[in-house]
Amino acid sequence: MTSAQIIYAGSPDFAVPALEALVASPHDVVAVLTQPDKPAGRGRQLRACPVKAAAEQHGLRVLQPEKMTDSLIQAQLKAMTADLFVVAAFGQLLPTEVLAIPRLGCVNLHGSILPRWRGASPIQTAILSGDTETGISLMQMDKGLDTGPVYAESRVAIEPTDTGGSLHDRLAQVGAELLMTHLDGLLDGSLQATPQPDDGVTYARLIKKQDGVIDWQRSAGEIDCRIRAFNPWPVAQTTLDGAVLRCWLSSLADPAEEPAAQPGTVLGVEGDALRIQTGSGQLLLHTVQAAGRKPVSGKAFANARDLSGRVLGD
Image 1 (cartoon, one colour):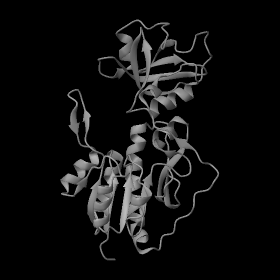
Image 2 (spheres, helix red, strand yellow):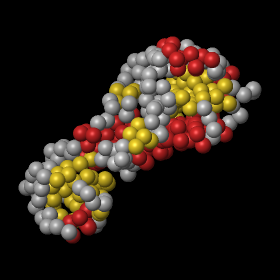
Image 3 (cartoon, one colour):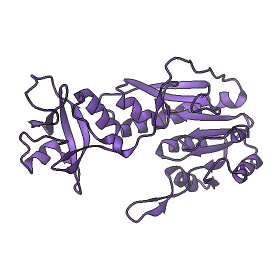
């Protein structure tokens, strides 16, 4: 097959492996679309997103439009006469004018098995909801939010120890492999897309920092899912003596007789963890972080203070 002209659109770490795979392929990445640089860190200095950094390492042309509805960026894209747009976590919806530009349309690597978890945060939401499986969908983009027909999918088990970070990294690699497996079929027209079913549609809304607050009235299973889903961001948190205590890693405690303790009560130390009473069952907090301190094991945290009978989140 002759080399195709491809425009790639992506921004975070999730989108880097697919870009690297395209660069290593026989095809020509004529431009990379990514989000504008944003202030970051204590100094609030402008920082490039991971996809821009990767693109610049390969000497690729980088475009950073504020809005894809801008007529100038649309004119630039048309002038490139690309065969295909490949999108992965770009961060902006593509208007119909842009969807119509490439000869073969626009495809998207989405971090779930559609139609489950359309939207902004499918990876975290899958863990948060207690799902045991997720994956990557290679889909044709249309004007809806992740509503287009699906070309191919790759399923991935969600392990009991998975965090948002570990699952994200695994799915990013799976997405790159799925794209390269089916890219030739996309380009020669032999790969056909299947419309998404009407049943089973769910939406993963954008995660916000306040979503990380732990409600100890919930079950141990629900809280464990929240802690794992929100590692490394926004990080689940509770309070102790009015100060924030971030909760990085947890697991379910072995079943035990429920004590007469209110949810959030520290029951003691077990191994490297704090054993906490929840609304139903008990949870082991393996790694916690006090404000202004480094993360430590639950045991080390307990060794530095008297936690007997203390209640988190009060």
